[in-house]
Length: 135
Ligand SMILES: [Ca+2]
Ligand SMILES: [Ca+2]
Ligand SMILES: [Ca+2]
Image 1 (cartoon, rainbow, N blue to C red):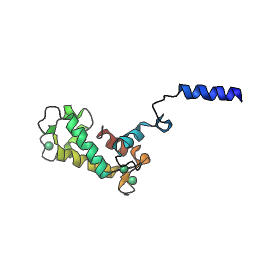
Image 2 (cartoon, rainbow, N blue to C red):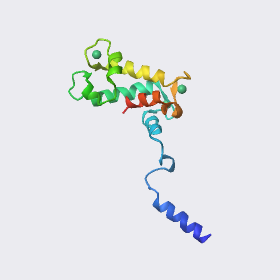
Image 3 (tube, helix red, strand yellow):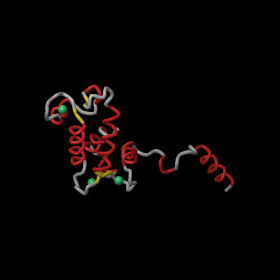
Image 4 (tube, helix red, strand yellow):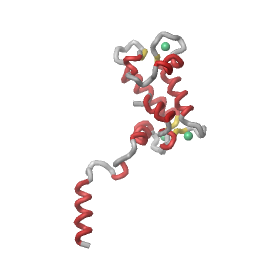
């Protein structure tokens, strides 16, 4: 008993005090959901995803010309995807094009079509492709 209590105390002391226990050792994909899930229902809907993607667009858009070129996108969008996402073919994505790409990836990541991407869906290849545009 005493030994158990000592071990428990040692474990408590070793745990990072600032973090709630549930935040420990979460898979990366869940952190994406946590970062985007503003209403904290455990899933991300299109409005949450678009808000996060809009913020990412503004963050990446360093030269403030209203568009993201492949350099500013930093590998988030492959050359092939860029072609599809860039209907005006100017080699850059403006915000509308970026959000349209995000919406397409959201749909691809939500095969059960329930309006949200959950923790399981975000771990699929399509979910990861979506997550790349949100951070
Ligand atoms: Ca949500
Ligand atoms: Ca364009
Ligand atoms: Ca879903």
